[in-house]
Image (cartoon, rainbow over all chains, first blue to last red; front, side, top):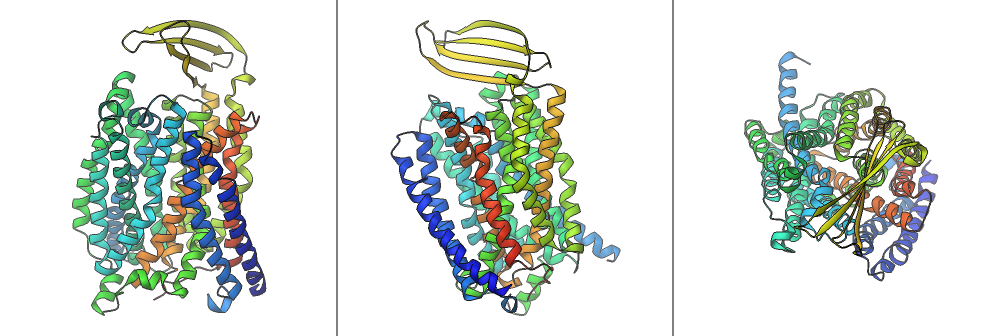
Length: 75
Length: 499
């Protein structure tokens, strides 16, 4: 189980990076160019609230998992 | 437990729960009145944009909750639980009362949405400080092995607060004419909050400090810098992140899908009359509320993780069939039209004309379509609004479908206060448990209505035939990631309070 937890750490880091790409270049920045108020509001929520949280938080969580901080002995 | 001890804990529960319930009430009347508020505080030339701006303002209150958790959590760990959550109560009551006094956009222009936004942020800060204090206060009074049961009473307060907000709104609507409610009656639910807050404040004032915190303080074991100890220390930070990604993130989206998104979905996608939606949601919440206590109690017996993960899994697999059934059961394209008639009305003061078409269907569903235009036959259509009055059969079917969603909420939310409290030591508990709770609920959950409504309206504009299901991708993806993390990393057995 400890090995699975460590390997999944890599998955969370990759997921954080993929989230960064999709949140910034697909759901974030393009929404500011449409000129529609609803797109603008959505873009702000994604880019300034969700992206930092998911990317930084999930990235650090993945790093800790990869380091073995969540192994049975350390929990 | 002795009779005296049992009496003592009930006193703690009632004082804590009442204040917390009132804070939830204050926080949620804004969401329950989102459709009306959007027409009062925002420019009315684009109703969709105004509604989304209202949802964004609603969401802003959620986004600042983690900051409230940090600010008041730190205070709670430094000076004590009791005085901290008394101050959050007063802040919340004051901000809610003030929202009820803000003049409309028509009167003071853009100052109106700015003032509402500021007050909404204050509400968010207060709530961010309140919940962690109440949960910690109750948990620290609860006997060993019964923490899930006793804290589950605090867990009912969010749903009861929402339910009371719906009841107050429904009563106000019934006592006033639609015109009176639209003109000034919607302010009443905000204004009466001040009375409830006052009563709760007086009750809380008589309570003692939590025994664990009082003991830690007497022994000089309280934290000197709770923020640094909670988040500057990698040992605690890893638990904060685990609590967020393995539990509260998924719990937050399940909570807000089952209660708030379901409400918005019925009002804005299914176009069901607001009073009917409030009534059927109220019934589903009332039926579902006892299950918070049931699952809290059960979590003491079989473990918190198994119940929370089952709730997440059921939500992930059943949301799409549930929302499909909600949509199809009231879709007028599946019904037989038996009567239709049209009439025109004129409002010369606003220079607007209304074309009203009423359709009656064989199953007694009635739809009313109002097309608003400038008072000129060549004038452009300004707005088309459809309102559906559903029959009893459809109403009870929707009650059942919402009730199922509330059951998922009770499974993930009932045990979570005890789960979070048990993860952190007394000296930094208020700060440490509040942050993942409010990030999971306030940000991942609180942003859900705005994000999911956006997905639905965009899919509808693009002609997607199943546009009404598109809003569910957000909760399903978040809950799925949370489920995997929770299953792999969380412990199966309950922890004891770790000091």
